[in-house]
Structure formats: structure tokens, C-alpha cells
Figure 1 (cartoon, rainbow, N blue to C red):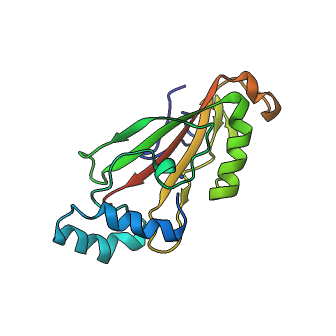
Figure 2: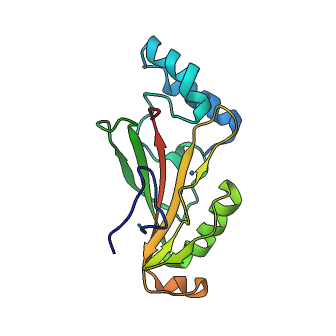
Length: 173
């Protein structure tokens, strides 16, 4: 199966998150310190309300930066595509199969992510899902999944690892 990814996360078509509002405001203010005045004005006027990240947001471990990364989730790195019109960034993570049920429950509880579904060739988030810490907060696309033979949740510990992604966009479409 070809791995299907949105610009910012794992989807059901393929298998391959965020801070409290009080913490989001200082992070956004600090992130915009180096951006030009016109760019910031456009972001404040149009993009902030739409969940677009500040234009000079660094590619990083978003869950750690936002204070919501569980200890058992391994950060693998961050990818950004500055050539794309929407300038997406995606932080990639891995969780062991033995911790996958716990992480799925955590993501469902903390961010409202829907439960994973088995589609075709693996477990995946059923659709692109975005979480925001309220009005003016950045929209984080959160996904989780793995290509695997069909195993019930009770047997996920037999799967070596699951992939997790947390993505943002820095320009509106």
C-alpha cells in the first residue's frame, strides 16, 4: 500500500497536537518577533483567526513546545515545505505498539482525536483532524497510524511501532 499523507498528517487513505490558550499567546508573540511588519499585519488580520501559524514559526517538536508530549512518544524530526503555497510543517513521532493504545486514548482525551480505524492495510486516523486551543489558536493536524495486518487493539503490542504526525500550515490557501 502506498503511504497516504495529507500536507500535515496521517489519513485513512494511507497509514503512516498543543497548548492551553494561556501558553499559546506568549508562544505566538515570541514566534512573530522576527517577521516583517506587513507580514505580521496580514497574519493578524486574516490568518490568525483561521488557525494559520505565525509566518516565522520554526519547524520543531510541536507537542513538546506546547507542553503536551507524553514521555513514551519519540520525536523523530520535523519537515517543512517552504516551496508549497501553504508552507506546511509536520513533526513526526513514533510510539511502540505496546504504548499505542495508551497514546490513542491520550490523543482522544486531550485533543478530541477520533479513534483509529482499520482501513485496507492498516490502522489510521479516520480523517484529517485539527485541534485548536480556542479562537486565535493555531490549528494542529493530528494523525496516527501504521501499515499492518489486521490485529485488534488488544494485540497492538505485537506491532513494532505506530507513526504519529502533528502538522501546521503557515500560509492560507
